[in-house]
Structure formats: C-alpha cells, structure tokens
Image (cartoon, rainbow, N blue to C red; front, side, top):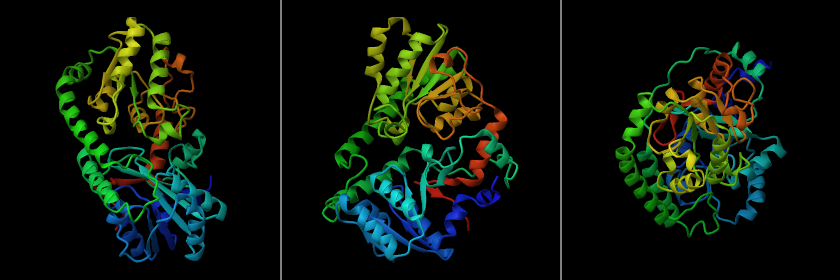
Length: 408
C-alpha cells in the first residue's frame, strides 16, 4: 500500500498544483467559486469558456479567462498550445466524457499533466465527486476488495458521520439551467461552432420542464397508494430497476446498451423468463428525466406480449427510493448511484454496465438469470471500507447547484 497516495483528499491534492486550467464546469457558479478558492491557496487559475452559458457564470472579465470560438476540429491543437504556453500543470473539468474533455484528457495523458474530473456525488445527497484521470467506470481506483480493506486501516476518519445537509431538488437545477441555456442562445453568435453534449434548444427544455412539473403533481396523486403499499410492506418480494437519465454517459459510454429502452427491454425479458413466480419488479423512472421521456408504452407493450406478468411489473415515477430500498430484495442497475444507495441498505446489487464498484464482495458476480433466483449478499465490512475511502478522498460535501462546502 502506497500511503502517499491516500494521505490527502483529492481536493487537497488538486490545490497543490500552481497553474490550473478549468474547462467546462457544472452549470452554475461552482467553477467560479472553485477558482477563487484555488487562488486563495496561491494557484494561478485559467478558464476556457465554450458558450454564452459558461461566460455568464464565469465572466471573461476575470483574469486569465478566454472564450474558445473556433471549430471543435481545431480544439486539440488550440488546447495543446494553450497548455504549453501557460505552463499548465493541472486541467479540471466536470464530466470526463464530453467531447472537449475527452480531447483534454488525451493531451494530459500524453504530456503527463494532471487531469481532474468532477461529477455528481457517488453517495448522494449532500456529496459531489472529484477524481484524478476519470470518474465512474474511468476511476483509477482498483476493483480489488483487499486494496480497500488495506486502505481503510490508514484512513483519518473510519466511522461514517452524516454530512451537513445541502439544499437540492429539481427547482434550483431548473432555474440555473434556464439561465444557462438562455445565455447560450443569446450569445450563440460569439460561439458559432460550439457543439453541446445535449440539445441546446430553449423550447425543448421549457416544454420538458413544464411537463415535468405537471407530471410531478399528477404522480403525487396517482402513485400515493403504491407508495403506501410499499411503506406498509404489502408489495411482497420485489426487485428494483432504477432507470438512468436517457442521455446519461452511464448508458452512452459505460454500458453495452444503446439506450435506456434497450436496457429496460433486456431486464424485463430476463425477469419474465427467470424470476420466481412470487416476485415482482419495480421499474423506477429517473426524477431528472420526468419531463423528457416516458416508458409506460414500452411496459404496456411488454405486458401485452407477456400477459402472465400483469401485476408483477410495476412502473413508478415519484415513489421515494428509500421506501423501495427498505423493502426490496435486490437491485438491478446499469451503473447508478442508486446501486451504492442499495449497498448502504445491505441490498444485493447486480450491475449491467461498467461500474467502478462492481467487484467481488460488493456486487453480485452472478449471471442476471441466477440473480433473480438467489441474489448474492454484499459484504457489509467491505462496503464500509469502500464507502469510507471515498468519503475521505473523493467526496466533497455539497451540491453543485446550491452550495459546495470548500475548506476555509
């Protein structure tokens, strides 16, 4: 065990660099706040903006801030030259699978420059993630139980302490996103060749957010009886399938499925063929995808083909995940943080994608067809060691869209 590699948190290790380049951050002001914090520690911080939304939350009036206005095809040479000219020793981004960030990572790896990626918290709520070289399935951490058990003995904090709560929810994200995409639209003439990783249509998002609000109200009314049955333990034996956001990199990059729909169809078919007759499957829609996509038609089509499954496949939207975790007997997921939430509840988890926590002792290594019949239990001590390593080193208390608690 190399004690030097675990002596500092990742945030502390990032702050040791002296010339840091920030690329695209989470929408909102977090990267601006991060830059001020890094500067207080003596670093010189550079920033590249890619669209009007970036510029709104991190103005180019700030020192060492530059707009990138050329085509994506020219970005590799531009960034390579920028890093060389400004003697950059660390590059930081949010989301390591975005096209501009993949280019940055390639350059950093070739030039032996530190590359850091922020991501939503592995242990949400109240956490965000920071890892070096990559996040999620691109995490550099070993998929080795013994490594985490050895690391645990050297941690400063070995007992889990609840983090300070941070405000969250859909509303702050929606408000920040509305401002971000509006500014992207208003300043599109300044960034004519920018390629966004998602749709940048204002009308698309306004429609989706309005629909999300209406559906939220509707599901609060229509699903209340389902939630009550689950809380009372009346559903019987059931497995949980939490769906990913339809545009999530966990599907596009970290799985062998082309879409969430393809994953859903695979799991439904496997459940129909292999699951014991006295079990049910609760399919939970992702709350951030509420206004963007709906899989009710897919499930109805499946039930028409398999009428014997009626009453055994239950589709929910706003039933709280903790209620499901308290009563379920297992979870199947591509690579969702819901899987880590399930492990907190000592629930068996089967991973269908490529997850950094998919290892012997934590998640089931069985074939899915066997998992339905006798799911493997996780090792509680190993999961505690795994969780506490991340709390000590990769997790930061906060929420990108409200407040991230950077050290004083």
